Image 1: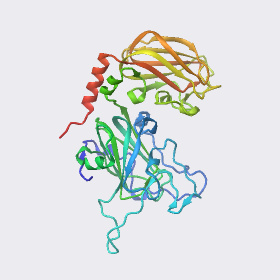
Image 2 (image 1 turned 180 degrees about the horizontal axis):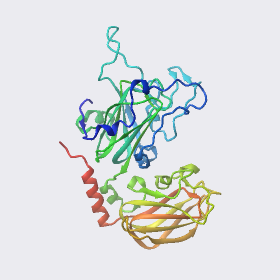
Image 3 (image 1 turned 90 degrees about the vertical axis):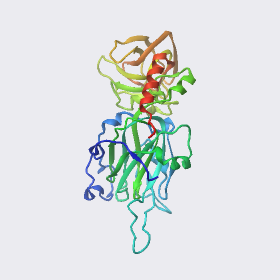
Image 4 (image 1 turned 60 degrees about the horizontal axis):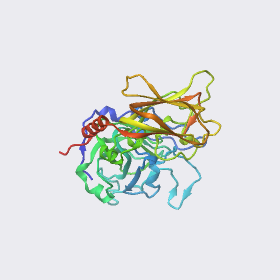
Length: 389
């Protein structure tokens, strides 16, 4: 897969931190907190949905090599861990994806060729527009790749690894070959504006990566949503997103619109305890203009810290006034609540208010797209689909 079309963009956007050789390596681990000398980073795109989240159905479908650590660990939700005493028969146990050391053709040419590299293929959990990528090399201090590059493509259906590798012309380079640092969060802004379903991570020439995050905006298939008829118009997998929230002290408000059920307390949203007379809230953007017919509020695993009451308001565009469609209603802890609306509500945005504080696991807004919403989403998707040639 050596043929890629490069998406035009500024070179500076892909070099957020200098990566000179003397700055690339982290110091050997000396004991104590293994994250004490971790080189983190704040990236504006990190607030967007991780399109490679396993909870959305993402997976690492193939890799050139995984001799030391399995490719699947790239998408583990939790930060990488390090156990100084953990060794196996292949060497040090690492929490990430790690390949063998590449070699040249012989004793007279021991170094790998410039084009030699390892790769991993990632199927995104939801198709979308990629805005930024984090290649996290946590705990890979002297065994991280010298450089990385990333390509992306849009495929229909569920292609096999062989089909992904054979379709060379479908891939576009969205992050050019760029130096990275060890034991660090390496962030890359992406400006392509296209809709993708897969990414290919290349590490030059070899090494290890702890975690991969692919942040962007979900852009679902409007034809599929039309076939479904009724669906959750707020769910991130269908194109919903959190636009703002009052608090995310213990866990992210974005968890409330993840697919599936919550499996433990931090898989939902929980705020700090209020000591004033205000209330907490989350604002959402729906998949497109929708007609909402029913609401579900789930407080699973939140027992002594569930919100006491909840209300729901909607509006038809980002600057419109809010209209309450579900009045303030009491919640029970660790319970799924179902509320049919008195009349269908047309909206592009929704706001959930909780009183006075606390949390919930999931919010579901059941309905479907309006004709105007379907037309807008279809147009948005068409503009983001890569044209051939």
